[in-house]
Amino acid sequence: MLERIRLESLRDKVTTAENAVKIIKDGMTIGSSGFTKAGDSKAILPALAERGKTEDLKVTLMTGASLGHGTDGKLAEANVLKKRMPFQVDPILRNKINNGEILFIDQHLSESAELLHTKNLQNIDVAIIEAAYIERDGSIVPTTSVGNSVTFAALAKKVIIEINIEVPEEVYGIHDIYQAENYPYRNVIPIVAPWNKIGRKSIPIDPNKIEAIVFTNRKDSPADIAEPDEKTTAIARHLLTFFENEVRLGRLTDRLLPLQAGIGKVANAVLTGFRDSNFYDLTMFSEVLQDSTFDLIDSGKLSFASASSITVSRECYERVLGNLSKYKDKFVLRPQNISNTPGLIRRLGVIAINTAIEFDIYGNVNSTHIGGTKIMNGIGGSGDFARNAYLSIFVTQAASKDNNISHVLPMVSHTDHTEHDVDVLVTDVGLADLRGLAPRERAQKIIDNCVHPDYKEELQSYFDRACKRGGHTPHLLEEAFSWHLRFSETGSMKQKTAVETVN
Image (tube, rainbow, N blue to C red; front, side, top):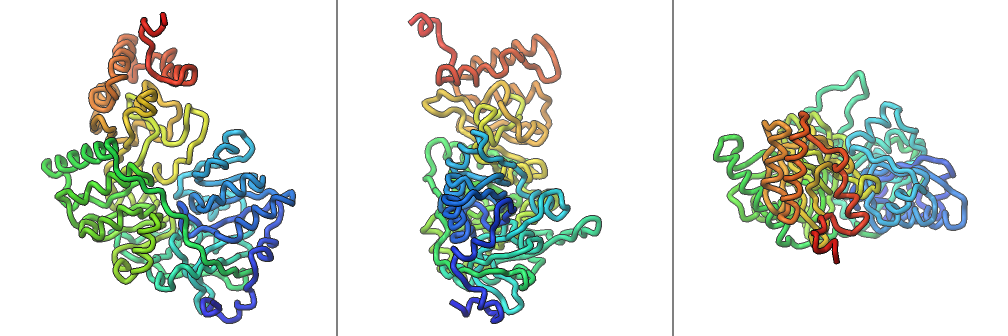
């Protein structure tokens, strides 16, 4: 294992997780690698949770995105977390956030590193970074994600390295490590195509800051992959038909433009739909590479993919990391303030496909909150892409929970993406292209194409009555949240009929 520490002067830094975690003190700010379960801390953060069971210890934790192996939940249960940012998916942590026990900053994933470099966030006391190995110059070769690790390594006062021997050393070369200059000396980021590599292959670090090295041998948590179902297949079909029409109109070619897709089963289903389409030589400029990405590479449909992490099922993990020579020239992993940087998204003309919790008749999208108050996961990178994409697309099912919840509403209970940042909305019922439409036109298009049949009549009635009252964006404020209130009181957004009311 020591051969993975090629700078021999660091070999005496090897220790146990229990010893290394003593570097972390109460009140510190911790920056840890990890982006949607990939490349996360598998030893130090769990050891910190164990310490929290017997010590009064509170820290602020920053990562790239979510962590795997239930680590966020373990930290939350041990009451170790004072504040968490910029993204999470753990149900235990989520409940503590919604109960006000842990503070959470829901942040655009492109912004965390920028705010650290401009000193608008607290300094990083300790960075915890997973590596495949340490180079002779002390730089570290990351594993399955880059995330915010470059910034954490540069700015932290002390660094703990977790060398994961489960990750083959052949990952060297899949990373493109580039750090933009600080303001006001920032230059153009010279990426003009997803496959452009502009940086180095390892993360530079001052070896004198490395306080401890811990060896681990644990794979990333596997992604939860659901097979496409009737609804997700319908959404994919509507989108593919839309793209085919864009080609016929001369707005796109059969190669489309670089694709971005959020995480989850809907995004996977949409991307999987391209496998049987007429599109070819596709590319991706995204933040996460999922199973569908590598399935498209294997099918010959996708020629190159750029992102910040690989978050895949166990089978796909073994397929890719066990055969890196096959895939190495077909993807690259970058820091998230590069993969998600607005200027590159706009320059490359990215087609962004992200998931909504709900949207309203004017095209405002809620990606983060249930009932307007309870955080689900976070905005992630969807805002980075939505505002700057060539096409900003949001998808969701029209209704769920035995159709007791409509995902198309008079007004969203929380707004993450305003109508100004949304081009296309898709449900399993249909697709609404909102480009070039005024608010009243958008509303009618959405009602006609996206609403579940159980709610269409009532939503049309709301809009018609609002129009009679007037306004550029007509609303009945006394009714705008009535569907949410009805659900909280009765468990259904459906209006009760006269017969049901009598019964």
